[in-house]
Image (cartoon, rainbow, N blue to C red; front, side, top):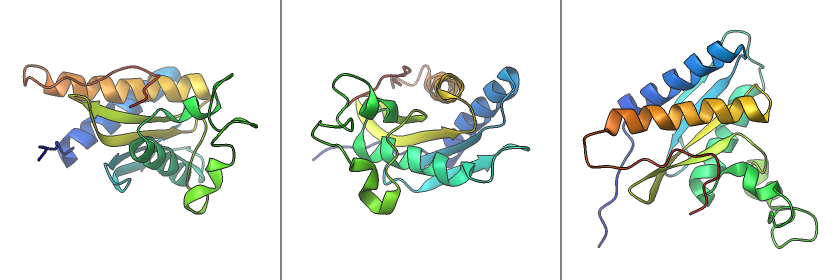
Length: 159
């Protein structure tokens, strides 16, 4: 039997707030989605001026990152990205009725080595989405500091 951790709403809200603060700092209108381990949104927010497509894209990225336990950009990172033409998962983005996101902006939330949630960003370029995602992960790490739990804060995550 394994004990599992659960991301709670207050922690998800803190993560989303940190992502929005970073987005405002770098001048981009992001949509942020923090989902649970099953890929269902706990927090989904579109900043003023954000694209109307942002909520679905951010959710798809968070869903993919949580469910497949890796940063979404790793699917298309050359030369061995599994979703690249000729590689084993080419076409995976068609899975789950097109909800599978195989591009930058989705990160699994890893606490004590367990994927417990996902974060997805949409609205900026890859560098901006990554910066906002890392801000969200760092906010969770700060919230849990002193609790004995370790949060993985990095762009390239594969579990």
